Structures are given as C-alpha cells and as structure tokens.
Image (cartoon, rainbow, N blue to C red; front, side):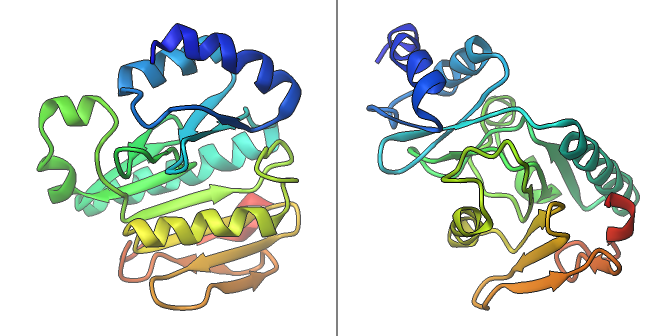
Length: 211
C-alpha cells in the first residue's frame, strides 16, 4: 500500500469517525508510518494486529506538563544509574510486524537497545520497553476515554514483555500499576510516592508533584 493512498482514506475518517481506521496496515513500513504522522500533524499513529490504526490525538496543557515532568525525572535517574535509556512520547516501538506502540514515556535496558543495529535504532526499535508509562488525558480517543478502555492496553504491554507499566489518571488521581503475572494494583490519591521497584531501582515518583 502506498502511504499517500492510505492518507487519502485516513484523513476524513480521523475527522469524522474517531480513533479507529481499518485497512491493510500490517505491511506499512516505518517510513510510511512516519510520513502519515507528519501529514497528520497533531496526531500519532499506532498499529494493531487486527489491521487497524489507533489515531492518537495531541494532549492538553496539563497532560503535557505532567508528561514532561515525569520524563525529566526519568532522564535524571537514568543518567545517574547508567543502566538504560529513556524515550519520550514521540518514539514508536515495533512490538511485532503488525503492532506499533508509542507510550507516553518508556525505559529500555542499555544492553537491549545497544544490541540493535544502527538502522534499527534510527527506525522504530523492534523491541518492547522494560518500563512504560501512560497518562490518561481528556483527549484520549480510545473508546470513550474512560479507564476501562485504557486498561486493556496496559495488559497488552505486559503480554509483549513489559516488566512494569504505570497508568496515571490525573483526572481521578489514581494510578494503576501493572506487573507480569499479577492483578493490577490500584493506588488512590496522589499523596504517596511510587517506586520503580526492581525494574527501575532507585527511581521514585512523588505523585504530589503532578497534581
């Protein structure tokens, strides 16, 4: 499929029907998806195993501020620890030939990312991060934007190999912590500090800083 042909079909659907667009997307290259994202401007694109696209809209000011703050804290920790790399929300990871995801923030162990070729590092890294963060925003276009529509995405991260995943909900001041092989933990209230546990040893996120 040619990227421009895909785009001609995609643009009106984004404007009128929401976040999901059907089409033969599994064969789209990294370059084709980047071209689509550039043409869409404010949107990011994720691809699914069932040949559909998630059109991820831009965030509001509050969500953007929280995202920037947490990314900065992660970067500061990662530079001191020296054990891995932090990636921001514009990074696309290719979990499988058909599935591309761009979490709001991610961390990958150094030896895993360094094992990729230069071309793989410069494209969509073909791996699943060790840690991912998602932030609920009023602009979320998955289902009706409620938590019940976002939680399956977190479980999908674990299925692909994420070792720790946080879903932050600033709207309800709740955090959903996902770990492999365990029911997710629900933390209510932003009056405590999250620990990176054994995945991000020594990293802490004071939730009071993102109210």
